[in-house]
Image 1: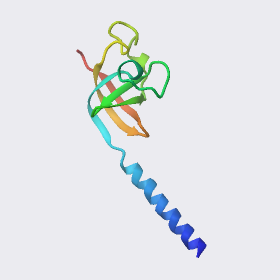
Image 2: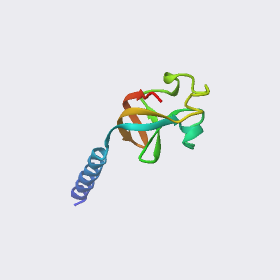
Image 3: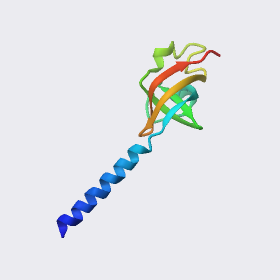
Image 4: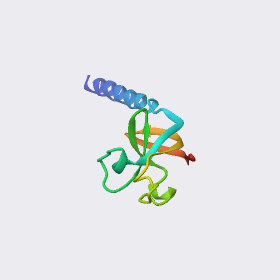
Length: 106
């Protein structure tokens, strides 16, 4: 009896994790991008890190870094300005996993 219950628990847990994975939504849109700490009020990391705001919610970005796009602390850098970018990727565990990130001209 115990082994049957354990098997059913394992099966239902596996199903829940599989469902969670399918909830990852592919993003392909123009979004606001900036320093998460300076302009989007993200507090889970220290320092200055690239973030994207999608549907009103900000996420730190994996796949490209803040300094890959110029001096973040320049007058027009990410710590002083919110810019637009064409972004592609997925939101996984509260972070945006970028597969493409292209800044748009202002």
